[in-house]
Image (cartoon, rainbow, N blue to C red):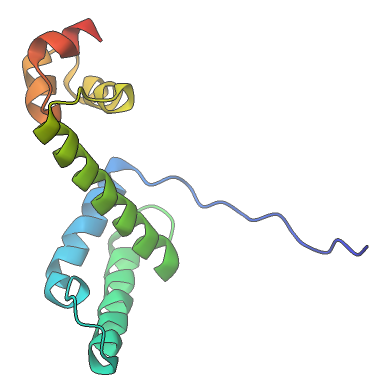
Length: 128
């Protein structure tokens, strides 16, 4: 059997500033991108909007260039995570450890800020 497949080359992980840049770039085109219509004209507008997001993102980033598919998937994952966090917060489910770690890296042991940013109680943050 011929095994000519090359291993997939991974792009560097998105940093926090990459996520913020992506969100701010998508925000400019949100009306088109988040439109629920799926007719041909709307799909064409969405493709153009995503092309513009990719162009703006890649011209503004100091990191590596990203593909259209990568930006779309990352945005989709961010939305999914935000929905889950909002749902968990509404249901009173404690914040996961990874979220706490990221916020601890940013705020140190200021449990009030960590709790405010994650939606968890100050007590549960300090006990984690």
